[in-house]
Length: 370
Figure 1: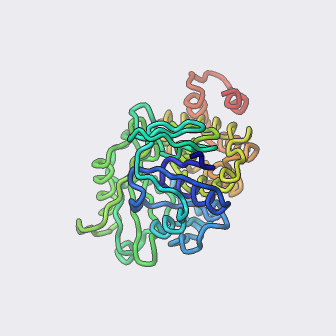
Figure 2: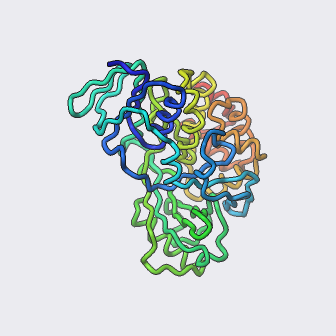
Figure 3: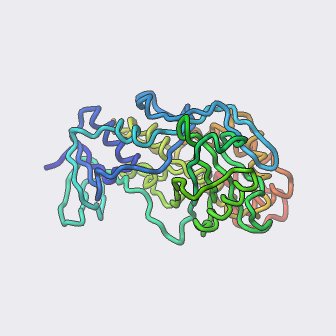
């Protein structure tokens, strides 16, 4: 039997896509090794990224103006939301789909081959299985603790905090503090390696987080709930038959992909292209930005983000969220490049292009020819 859509993978991206296909009245089959598994990761987004159809109670907390620290403080004029993971999962209802508890080992344009040997046929077969880990892929890692908010006095919600009070050596790979409310009573404090190849491991991040919290007067008992994060920020394959992180939706500068998948789910459900020409160009520009982050000396990262968070809010939004906004992304990257101190600018250019820089280079045209 050939159905309208087969979705391989029931993480947030796959479940959102299956849900929106069902809303459109399509016949849907979903495949996942553990379709009833509950999600435990923390998902967050900029409020303006979320689609109108998302259930309102899927938002657990909103931060009106999150803070970012490079070498100085920046207040971001853009609401940031933390999602209620359980409610998000429940709201993406897949009742009416045929649910198969199996592992998809091949996902092609019209067929999916399962580990049991079953072959499924669909007018569209979409791979939403995420990205497998590999030493060749840059990763984001984090180690976090969930604390009562009254124990976190003095720590306000922060998108990233690069201040060097985590005990790491000056020349060691950098990590930052991410601090967000999970609800009215609990905060997540997470030491994060933005991106690395290899990334910092959990033990190092744990030690840094504990040192940072001690330096800020936050007491830890050892009974706190722990969140561990490790996932690739590259390796997706943009295309008609992939979706979510597997389809290149992960932003290499933040690791975020869930909001982008939620926003694109209706587009893909109705059969439209998730990757117009502008989106593919933005994808290449973001890949160039990833090379810059991987190639910068550790001491340059706070300065780099100082420059980024002095950009106008519209430019920040375009780079962080404008998956199909080519003009906005180009303007943001030009603005950032022009704002950086000259030594950092040269190193960004060298890292982006992978070549030594001995004279001025027209970085926009070089990137566009990527």
